[in-house]
Image 1: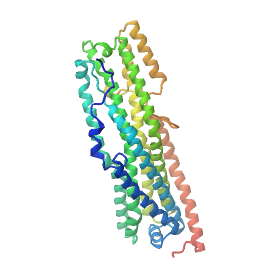
Image 2: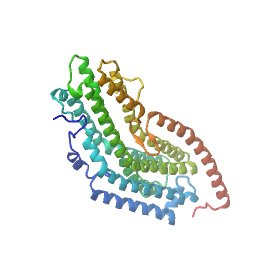
Image 3: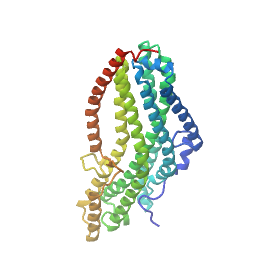
Image 4: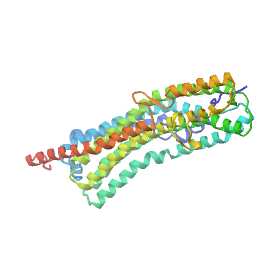
Length: 412
């Protein structure tokens, strides 16, 4: 009995999940409860700072050149960021439990048409299986790397400038915030894992065209749904593309909530970094937090890039190497084959669908995520962020001078 081009997992997620049971977001429920309780403690910790503004907190903030009047606002931004990350933890875990692992199981193509099909696809499938597993192993490094690097960089700056508030800043503010950012890093990379799974499935579809066309060009005559000269091939291909589109909609209509939460967390962190960079009178701190601001903005684009890359493998018509051609390009290459009337009709139907549909990852509100869309958004950010930062800094510095002259900002 013949199987579909994309039916059945090669390796079940049940063999992978035990290895990540202690991770945030994708791990076991008990571990998520522990992370959630710690996150709530961090939330209460910063909320207390914003409400009571204890002397050590005020002195620590003033130690990086930020006047006292901005202490509560800074704590408010941190509380907002931590609240969003807590929501990320909740929605991300639900997404992983109900969507992600099922998506993983369906990702690996298992073509079982014939021995010839096994020979055509087995090696590529194994390579993609291994690639997904290798990426999963790097998730902790990718998630923990940026916040730990920022923590180290901040410590170096404070030490080299002989800041007297180094310990208070590191243990009272930086470390709790880094814990929050580590959770955010895992949430962000779970979305990237989803797009990696999408890419693996797209490559499986592409292999149907790439390998069967290569076998046909070499003089082999594939049979049935693997023969591009027969209508069965194009009927099967269209059915599988439509099935994959439905699956993408199912995954990302839910994953969009986690994606927007991730982007909102990046936004709140960007505002906090902008506040400190604009309000401080310490040049080193200003440079440090402006660098963090740029990094956070770039990270938001980096979250969307894997989605755009997956869409490119679906519908791009840009010139590229044979290995990187999109499904649309691969299918278009069949236009030179001599088909019978029935096969040509189904081929035209297939290409019409590819031309008219938004084949790729589509996010509610954002639309289809493409490289060109990201470039346009990045261009806007590159123009707006420096301008907005300059205006905000001038305004905040004027406020600092006014309160400094009135004595409102006198050290307690």
